[in-house]
Length: 128
Image (cartoon, rainbow, N blue to C red):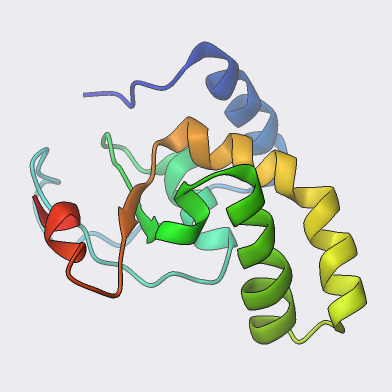
């Protein structure tokens, strides 16, 4: 079963494959099941991209709910939590970088149809 992504997103993925080499996959099972939850290391922001580009099964990612909302919510998360708190950029630079990359990240997240995860009781909806 192939990933069912929108044609424009598939085009973007073909371009990204030119710059991201195929990883070496170690599979200790005989097959990869279609209906399964795959748990793997995240490897910062590059991990999900590599999985999207090269994983041989149709997948949907779980992601923080802030990145599954509006463009404004994504910008706030990127500028405060991701670039400032996690990447340790100065606040002013984090806001500049978030402003530049947010439209691309927004399109990428919409293209891969992230399943939002929540830190409260709404997590039940994610599990359903």
